[in-house]
Amino acid sequence: MVIAPDVICVVTPYDVSFSHGIGGHVNSWMAGQAPHIAARLAEGGFEPDDTALHLAAEAGEFIGAWTRYTGRARRDGTEDEARIELADVVIAAYVLAHQHDWDLDEAISRTVLVDPKLDGVNLVLAVSAKVGGFITLWTTPIQRARQHAPRALGEVVLVARRIATEEKWDLAGDIARKVEIGFERGFGKRNKRDAG
Image (cartoon, rainbow, N blue to C red; front, side, top):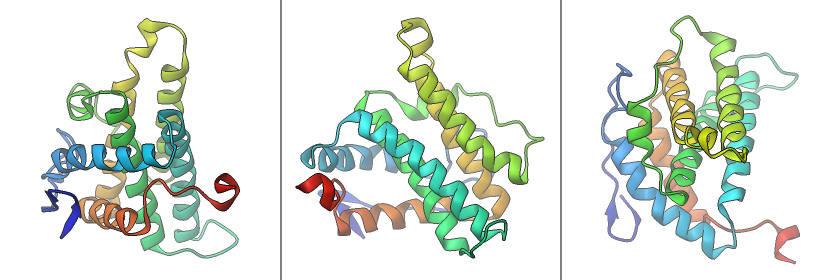
């Protein structure tokens, strides 16, 4: 499947041991897709700050979708909705890293693994906590603290990967599917309110 100009998507199942990246070829594949997505977003007038907002929004959307899927909300949701929202979190992380010239895979390799005692609800809440930690570091005026932002962004990816592993979801396939949908529907298109 061709997703972006001159980029062919070949996604292999990821390694369930989470000692490096998100395993398989997804990390390098996503790093290759991020420039294309970022370019589409820039064409639509989106700035890196918009991507940071998108990352926070996607974390919230994932938690909402997971809550509905697991029967913890007033209305029902599907497993597929939760999976796609988790993929969105990882995609936003890679795009944001690209926009700041951060090597996210290198940052992930320097990141301490997710606490193995976290599971279920606490693991899902860790997505929001890790995104919040990243945003706190990224927005601080203290340069010494800001230098840790890429690693904090890597923690977001590791938590997402851990959730997918626990749920037995194909995160690699979900990411590829969501990127394909994004290119079909048009990354970088603003809603009607922004277009006017």
